[in-house]
Length: 541
Image 1 (cartoon, one colour):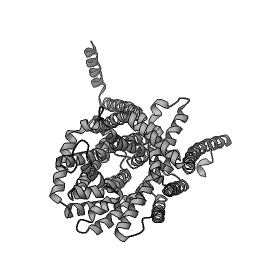
Image 2 (spheres, one colour):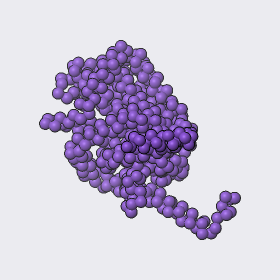
Image 3 (cartoon, rainbow, N blue to C red):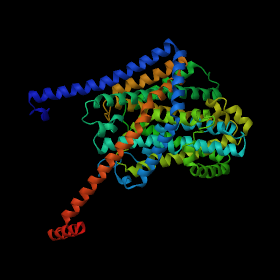
Image 4 (cartoon, rainbow, N blue to C red):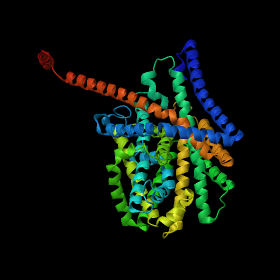
């Protein structure tokens, strides 16, 4: 109380008014998002068939009419990230010049990778390459050309492009948050062009509501789909019934674990879980490489990495403009829209844990290294499945939830690998939900880096109840579709974010040069300064 003794009553009243305004703003966003979610669930409950039809048609329209836009903007984002890494901007820190990273390189990478796409690698590591191997575009399935297509496409969908989408938003948020003193919100990226405008608050609130809705719908969908795959694995291994009851129990157990973790600190909860994830992932990957066709795995990685890099620009912009583009819409454009929908959650979380990193260090850690890990992962798991032949692959990909376990069953220690995969899936799901709970708490607390526990508790329970409700209603895919539609405006906003980022970086570089020049001048004598002034004048003549 000592620090408040000199405050007058008018000062205290003013501070109370400010606190009330902040609280009102936070709660307005908090309640608005809950109201919209309630409306969406009510519509699904009232007429699920119509809702599914409308959202599916709307998504098809977005993908069909704006597919080229996804391809162009995502490629630009990838090139911007690589440029920032290689240019002089790469030396700028995400924080003050003397700031240090909060986490070790291993813990930092573990957390960002677990939040980014750990679950997807386990889910699609086998299923996607085998699907493209059996059903390639314009090529006969089961051939050498089909294998090349399968790995090139898998590398494309899980490599530089998706990680660049996450990276750019996270990079921009970390820069504005830790270096410019802005709030930890997606809307903060628009401060350079909105600050002082009468409509600033309304636009920023709208952006933050979209970010929260995209996050909770995306994570709830993933939680539900994850429960389905874990249930399929347990059914395959232990004959546990593949039923709604089993899936609800799985979600309940996961919820208890991730809420307990989320209510703790970032250091004790998410960091520990993420480190465990990486350890289990390395163990499973090494088992696949050692027990599978080892030499073929390394050959596939080497050959198809070259194939991918050699065709980088071509596949990045391929639309099949005068042919059937259904495959492109169903795979690439759908993936890009899905990554964009997940960006508010993953980007906000990665930004939160990246204070003190340089831009170059950040891009290498969030784009380059994760992409290489994805390439190795798909090479190992894809080769494990494709080696079993087209006939087996055709049967396995009929159900992507069990494809991984069917492949493992064909190798030594298959049951053990399946058990480790289920454990890894559960661990990744806990970490994703844990990270999302933390991020949702931040977003609904005006960017507070340490959101209140009650909000994290509410969001944790809400996303789990949402997943359970949609499992009952059979509406998980509908919610996933809705999350992509909700996040579509973010795609349009990316070019504006790129502009504000470069605008701020240029100002930052200019200020740094001015400071460096001033420091040099201070070291010079009056005579040296006079000589320098004369030299500049002579050059101007």
